[in-house]
Image 1 (cartoon, helix red, strand yellow):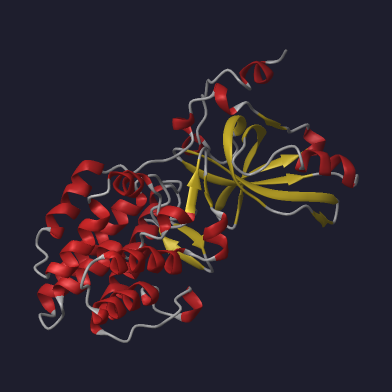
Image 2: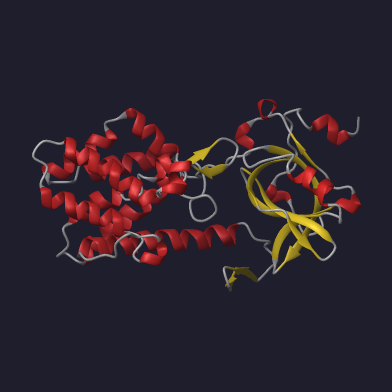
Length: 331
């Protein structure tokens, strides 16, 4: 038995994504976060997948030979959410680090027994104090003067099952706040921005906007599932968090006695329009001042956080990184 075979299901993890540098040999267990299709290239067959742990994620490219069946066997040997022992070499493409695996160099992917590993090694968590974040949400809720909106918020946050899920849920798979506690952290960011917006634009209905800010992404709770990696639920794929969130909130509003019909329309509109554009997944675009403010607060928190996350995980010696069709300055 070689060293790697002995470590497959030992539960021991020595190498993390954050340790990987250009030229590093990869020899450890990671979670599979994404798996692309098997495809042909000039020298044979290949496929891409993404591995991750609680320090980050990195793309992997497996370069196989001309025998489709043998490459296919490797491809079918693991799935998303599996733990796999990977051997390979860290390379670079468009100034982004990625792991290259080559069949000719005997690089391997081996599925591991999940029960033999500490799953805390594979899911990143917010670095912020979750209890303090939740306390802030409760503090802001108590400042809501409108009795109907106050009751709506408490119909969610007086439910321990909802609160537990809200505290743990991620806000994304690959973009901003893509870690446990990410939804809570993002919600606090959006609420803080909306409070500042209300201080500047005093004409806004503060209670309505803050309520929308607190609830705008509750649909992400059922949208995502997570064990050793974050992935999307079937409902998330079919429906999406915007519509799912609107349904969750609408059910609560329907249960509340004498909840104003106009409030139902305004709150649903804020939820359905908070991505701002049809091409960004919003069924509606903002038509109220509060919906407009919520959209831009949501967009600011998500975009700035994504920049911060990108910069944080890059090689400190680099000046620029290529991301989504542009270069981002890292200094």
